[in-house]
Image (cartoon, rainbow, N blue to C red):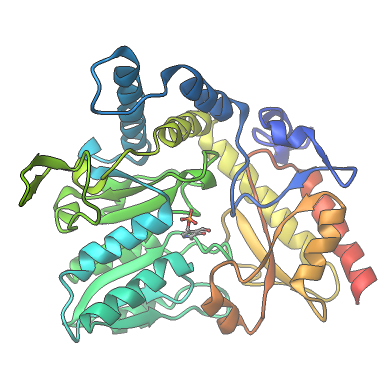
Amino acid sequence: MNPHDLPAGAQVAASFPALTQTVHGQRLVYLDGAASKLMPQCVIDAIAHYQSFDHANVHRGVHALAERATARFEDAREAVRDFIHASSTREVVFTRGATEALNLAAIGLGVGLRPGDEVIVSAIEHHANLVPWQMACARSGARLRFIAVRDDGTLDMDGFERLLGPRSRVLAVTQASNVLGTVPDVAALVARARCAGLATVVDGAQAVAHAPVDVQALDCDFYAFSAHKMYGPTGIGVLYGRESALDRIPPLFGGGDMIEAVTLESASYAGLPARLEAGTPNISGAVGLHAAIGFLGSFDRPRRLEAEHHLLAAMEAGLNRLAGVRVLAAGTPKQGALSFVVDGVHAHDVGTVLDRRGIAVRVGHHCAMPVMQRFGVPATVRASLSVHNTQGDVQALVDGVREACERLR
Ligand SMILES: Cc1ncc(COP(=O)(O)O)c(C=O)c1O
């Protein structure tokens, strides 16, 4: 057995029913985990069990099913707390996903922004951690400033230092680029920003499945992620917030579950996190997220991360050997994903050739148009790893890209 397949890869693939199918008559090679991870059977089973036997509304009923649904929902919150090492479940707000979580943070922090204040983001952000800050700045008169990205995909840390000034208020930065796969030194960025008195927001969407997360060690004010990028279902995510930071967010929605008392004229609000979770939540999603955390916990994580690191390095080396194929940020350490372009061939055409071979990758701008502009490409092909990927999958990709080069150039 190839050592790079351990402990992830072949054995783990059996946990994913989607991988038993063929696509266009070929074995499915799923290299699109950065968009959405496939769901393992244990997550599907947990959701199905909840839907079959425990489904009811939470927090309101006294009957057995309502109590069970509430317990499952709040157990999921505790599992998330433990997973990211938050100090209290009051700091774990369920959202529809990372996008909603980042918008909540931007709205909350936006309330305190004044004309001339400055919000700092990096130049490699997903639109979900860029557009909400553009909106917050437009509403408040604050100014958006950017940490530049170098040709090698790393952030210009000296430039960041120069951006810090008396009007700097917020740093919002990704823990891993969803396009390049590069990994900013978020710990250093957050530490420096906190020292300078800024509120800090970390977009963990791409990192959470690929590295252990400890929000207390990171010491950020907010941390956002989605369940579907960590083997859970779509439609649920988390905004972690330090309690004092969450207190700054006004309730975005009014309604059931977020109140303490209501008269015809006014309402007083519940405490955290209910204050930010109006209405019936995505209970089955929370159950699925809980199961996904259990799935991730069932591996020896350091060994799994090492195996993933080797696979990604093999992928980059294999692609680099193909004439006319260029990996973006080549040679820079990456986590979980890489992007490449084929000279003279549109990424969509490469993706189509790969799809005919049963290989699923992502093509396009990956909701990060400024990154495309910065690297002077209209689109890239992105290949990204999940725990089930093997050396065989990497070889299939390289062979597929070689065929695309031969056929399309
Ligand atoms: C880095 C990053 N941030 C945020 C998001 C948004 O996640 P979602 O669409 O699940 O809200 C994504 C999704 O691809 C992402 O890659």
